[in-house]
Length: 185
Length: 185
Image (cartoon, rainbow over all chains, first blue to last red; front, side, top):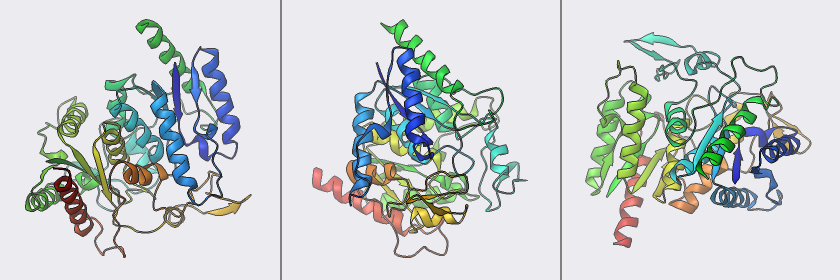
């Protein structure tokens, strides 16, 4: 079983090493982890971004499941590239898993970046745009996609000291995927 | 032809009115626009977020295409729920279109929210995380998904004064979708 390992991990300074650790964890549970940076792309090429896209899409098409790292990235919610990939895999009928190393609710996360006030019974940000307030950690589309197309979001009880390198919640996802596959075979 | 109208428009104070305007534009071009708020959901219900998810997914499954509003939302990039839906439609093999009322490059958008510096030949933010620098307006997965699964991102030459209510780029997407459908039939 191959699983696509999506996440903003690819933007870390030690992105390659984090990918190696993730693939090794998968290996210990009998799963082949496909990590985006394993695609060989010449970053200096004029069509580098397109090559990366095609490499990632080919990996997703080759995988039977996704484990998405939905830890907030440069804002209150998950990384857009990762979220796109989660949607792509859900639309493709693949098994969807995800984790997030920040268990805070979305409305509380939003408060770190903007002033959140109540107006006419709804929460709004400084621009007057509604802040989702369903007691969920992120946008409802991702949270319920995991419920419906795979396994509910895996969250640590407390935010780990190093959200980008603590792979406990990731390993929980790998175990859940391995158990699901064992029960299906 | 039914098109799913995705976007953070649903978070605007006048979300319902914006939806009506979008559906009316579709209608003028012979297209049925499906707007998420047309689902009837009791927001006070304990499972309101799940009802919204199911309503949106049913609309996406019913539609042959998506027009995603990828205007930056509460950060440098597109709204996560919208991006999830774009991925879902791409994975489902549907026609994908999108527009963005902010033509700025992603790296420049990131500078509005964090300090961006150069380190070892790459751009990084204040946390040391890589800032994508491919000359694209947002994460490469969404931009190239549109190229490959539909029509390249529609951008205005200049940011309109009211990014949330100017529907010029949206109407361009509707026209492009209508033309594509006419050429296929």
